[in-house]
Image 1: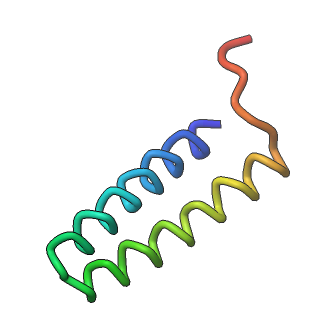
Image 2 (image 1 turned 90 degrees about the horizontal axis):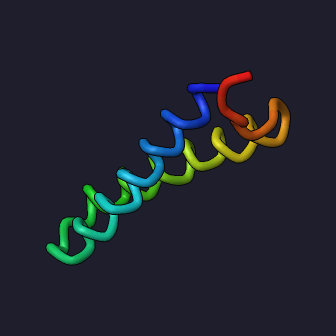
Length: 58
């Protein structure tokens, strides 16, 4: 379930990048950051729903 963790980190970084791009009025960067956040966030949600949330080592 390392995929969920990696995709979550990417989605969080994309959200921070979107906010930073909006602050500097870089609208193209904000668009791509928001698109990345939506895509990777969707993958996180669907992976967590279908395969469960990581529970650690067994």
